[in-house]
Image 1 (tube, rainbow, N blue to C red):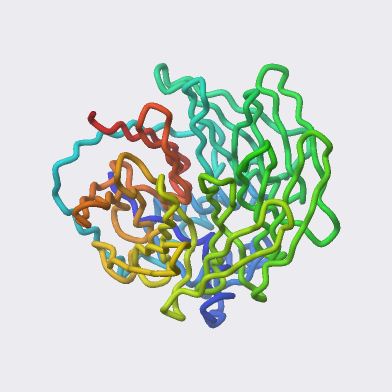
Image 2 (cartoon, rainbow, N blue to C red; image 1 turned 90 degrees about the horizontal axis):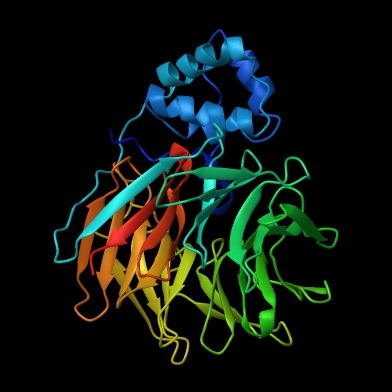
Length: 406
């Protein structure tokens, strides 16, 4: 069954970036409970700006409870009914399916902990699919052959794991988005080491290893980027040059230079890995809001323009930018993105159902597939070593493996 992608958790960003106006909660018998349980953490617009089916509101409420909302179990159905009656699904962009020559198949798994909101996927060297269960503060590991799932719980409660990457020794590194630290999990011992970030650097987001084993990361709301030397624990922090630029997704080029996109500005930036000096490229459209980035073997950057419904191409060598309208249109909200086999693959996260999109770099033609369970906003995706794709279907509490026919 297809479900509308749930975008409730992104409204906080679109409110800040695009200036959405606050809307009051509608009247109802549980309005007071909703105000007490929900608006202590976020504005009412995070609820009133989103309309969903009852099934999807159930998933939203489960995520909110997993994230700490104090809704008594015997009031859950009443709260779900309140949202479903007053904020129904409406005016959802429809997916545009574009046929093409490539064949794929999907395997999807529901993760064990209700309301986890799987955020980032990770394909490790041993063939497992890992994910961060951000709202339940868990790390999960899926055996894609058997479907067995094991979850690991960092000892620091309410840590909010977000970004995810593997080191050469098989350790799993993650950003503790709610607690301001970088974590390292040894899957064999289940021991977690925490690298606390400086004061004022409280929401680490995406992380990647550059050359020389140095870990680079973005810090979204703090408007900073950082580097961590795992050997010494030394941490260096730098300000993103543009105020409120909301540093977001990252890639590293063949020379070890990290690039990141600025979700709060129409910009892509690069970090000098030694000096932490930052260079920015301003995109041609002021309304562009790139959210995730991918990189090709020849170090060309592709970005998912979330606000405008475009796939963008930036050549850092020349500064040239080229853009392509995403198949499902300006409200499709391109999000998770990766490179694989001569093509850019990404997700359209606001259409029903979500789509997996392939853009052939030689022909510049699109091909799209409907994600079987609906997608639930694929916030990130990653290419596996054997040429497939893993992704997290956040709002549906699912993760997936996309096998590409060779």
